[in-house]
Length: 385
Image (cartoon, rainbow, N blue to C red; front, side):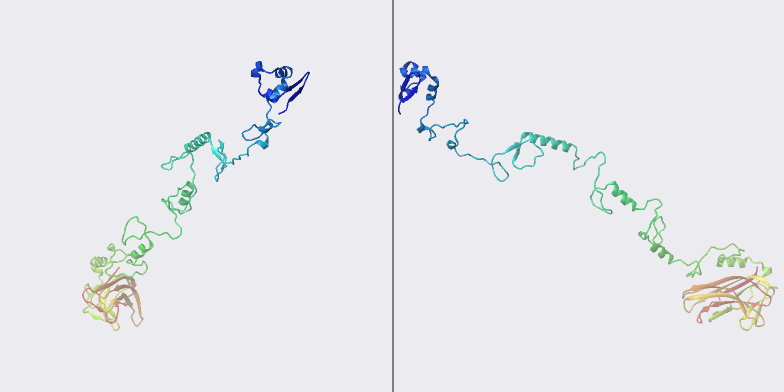
């Protein structure tokens, strides 16, 4: 390198060797020229001391050069290393966050965020009921189940009220539509509800109130002796009436002389048990055979009983006829029907009525042409009331 010439008050010519081989640390051994330079202008010396050979600037393992901004020149900087932000699909720089509401996917939770989250979860769980045997407070609410639901879904008060509204009360229920119930066994006698089927089954064995047709041996309470009403007269009542009659006003008690067969069988009063006196007498009448002739106007009670051997089952008629004299015809005083099966059975009738002097009383049994009426148990009784 050539000489360095410093133009000051005196010309100083220094070689590079003189400059580079001397330092302030060795001031005692400085050459006279360098020492003079140090004394005359320290700024120049400082500049020289910071001097870097051009060959060493910016070279590998050399000395870097700063720009005017005090930063390493861009041309001498190494290439920039760019580290990307981390995401759920790649690694990189991860930003920390303490927020509990941040929904980003490239931030990591700090211990504070985790601690805050735990506290928040604990606070929320503290106000919740357990799944097993919860003890609710306040007014818990649940969705209202559909009407008629039958499962493990919770029932609220609205569901219960809806179901109750469609039910009848236990006390004095007012039912609508067609209520149904189990049919009790026939002949049940309890507080169990009776269905129409139960009623029908029991009514099937009962007689109608209007014109009943009895079977078997119908029974009824025996009226008091002397009763005169629409009460049913039993055979016991008639027997009692016959046995209690005033014999001085005797009518007759007649029986048939033999069994008779035919469509219409007339009970001929040709055998008098009581003296007819001045009330009745036995007389012959062509159409009816022997009949009971009335000797004065009077009210009477007449009762007949017929024992049938029916040819076929059916309704058997018992009645009384008041036959007028001189071909004047007849009037039916009354009759009764009895349903008789093909077994030995009786039919009887009792009538009350007004008869005139000179008329004839005839009791008759009406059935079928093959019916037989027994002499035994068949009788006629007539007496003035």
